[in-house]
Image 1: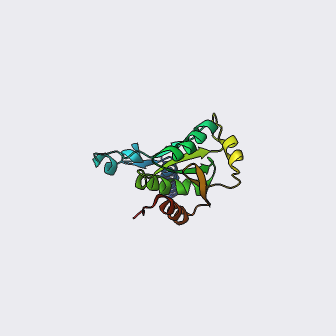
Image 2 (image 1 turned 90 degrees about the vertical axis):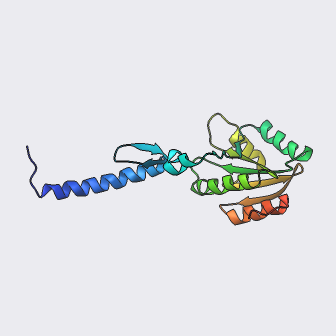
Image 3 (image 1 turned 120 degrees about the horizontal axis):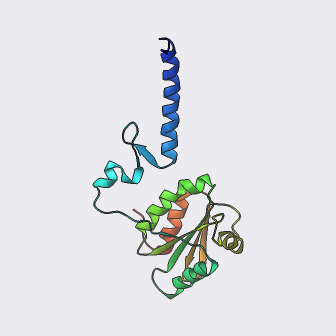
Length: 175
């Protein structure tokens, strides 16, 4: 069976939409299309492979109340004496937009501040109990602790305000 010549344009339209959908799905999944059928994770793309040093995120997951309490207590005892706790959920779009900026800030301020992330709806964690105890009513929310005390809070996806607050409490600039 051979399709009529005019059917090719219809198939091409379907292929174009299918390719667009495929590109969208691969982008959402964190993949890049290296060739027509070969997919590689973005972190293994050519640019990433050419770097000799892999930078790891300095944002640690906080899954228990005791872990958060210990991290706050540690700020009173030694260096770093600043703690930034980010509260998020898996479904929060603005939280996902802030993640790369928070990761960047954690690398910039790695000598002066520790960064934790609390996921409120992640299975197997005490995230919801932590958020209730800390009075979190909106996400993203970033609480800053210094010397064992909460000194600041930034609500919403405001990277500039978060940067300013971290700079103020660490005594250094991000630039």
